[in-house]
Amino acid sequence: MAKEEIKKLVENSKKVLEQDHDNFVKSIKNDLTSFKKKTLDQI
Image (cartoon, rainbow, N blue to C red; front, side, top):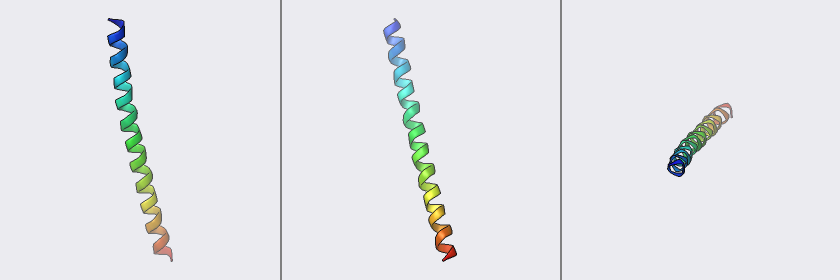
């Protein structure tokens, strides 16, 4: 019983971490593109 619960918890944590990572990558990419646009506009 305990092993199954631990497995479920680990799987859920993996999913959450993957989602967080994806969101983090997306936000960095968005920041980069907006920074590029601002820099190009200034030139």
